[in-house]
Amino acid sequence: MLDPAEIPEQPYKPKKLENLALSLALGLIVGVALAFISEHWSTVVRTPEEVERLTGLCLLAVVPRSSVQLDGVPVEAPLGREVVPWEPGAELAEAYRTLRSSVLLGWDNSMRRILITSPQPRDGKTTISLHLAWSLAQLGRRVLLIDADMRKPNCARQLGVVSDTGLSDYLEGEAERKEIIARTHLENLWIVPAGQPHAGASDLLHSPRFAALLDKAGSEFDHVVIDSPPSLALSDARTISRLVEGVILVVSDETDRASLRRTQQAFDDAGVRFLGFVMNRVNLNEMEYGYYHEYGSYYSKPGAERGM
Image (cartoon, rainbow, N blue to C red; front, side, top):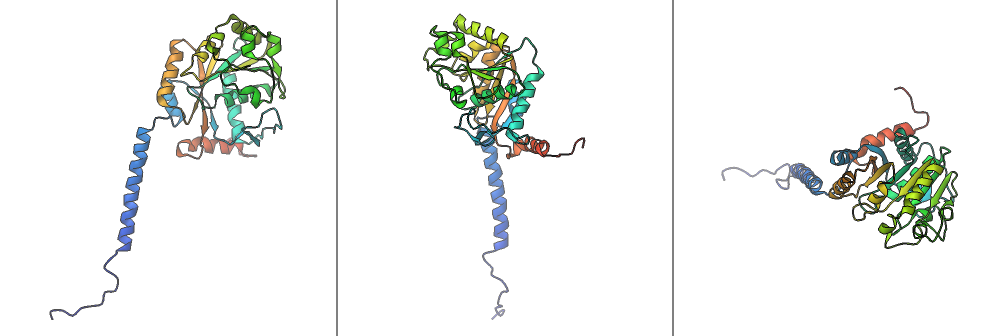
């Protein structure tokens, strides 16, 4: 016997503390690597700063993701029914007020017609069109909303307006201008519904009747907001853009970078004037939007300190 055996004070294996530390380190490394790979291979835009770098356009507003169209009103509920007034401190309401202010900063008497479009479907251009028109109407100005998406119209339904005639009927010569302008439940807001879905919408927009409609609307209303189809696959928005004073591009957290670049290039080639872009449906709780979330929360709190 060279040495008597001794009873160990603790087990030789497993070394729980060392294993735990090693697991945490490996987990951190793998997590960072996966995040880097995900960010590197992601094809969608993530922040307003990225959109500015890709397009050179200025940011008009950041609209947070929400399950409602307006405070307390579900997405599927028409804005013209059971309307709940905006709460002054609501982040969503403040976002649309910011958009309205950004638009009005560059507005003059010769600039009355604005086109709202997006690179691809589901970016939220119709929601932005509706709320921009409504927020302008809240200032006591006469506002006309034109639904120029004659393939998949949605504005009239959201506003609770039922009409047998609309833009497509007017452009085909089957209705007159006064017949297609409908009053909404919201004060100072009128709408031109899209009419019956039309496969040849692009051809109809080249009609002289459309130019005449916009020209007359610009003289009768303080503001004309036009909701158009997505711009990447369809030429409708580019056709309309030559008849308006400014274009707003709606970008969401699902907008593909390549689609955004191609859309902006197509409008640039046509000599279109962009007012800027709206970053729509963003999650303000994500790290990239921490600044916007804190800034909005600070100024939406009642009695917030000023001048600090």
